[in-house]
Image (cartoon, rainbow, N blue to C red):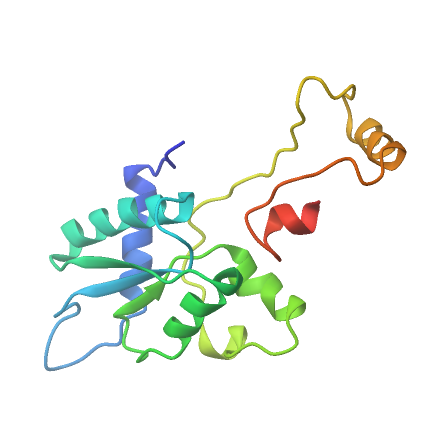
Length: 171
């Protein structure tokens, strides 16, 4: 499912992102391409959303927006690249809150300090989690599922897209 981004929300996002750029007397922002890092693999929802936003930003700002996927380590690799980039408004990260919030509690040592090295500009989307089971599993509610799992120890499996990701933590 492709994320939807209303034109109004995309332009609000673009305006918010432009506000983070420092003012330079010599030249107007942006004077060169903007890099938007996605700390997850290409093709996922975050990547698709980044491409939609990047297209709107490029059209509104008159500069290309390059989407740079840097997956790995629950978003830490890509987020670290942005934290270490020059603080000039030309390198942004579009991430899930687990890279920006929960990782600081899950890992003893991160290569960046979320509060010191990054600034939240805009919350773009919210994505609720849903719990589904195969129709052959005889449950209809969360408590019934917990009892079923307890009664079938070692026989029930679940899937998530990564250690420390919301589906993993919720499970």
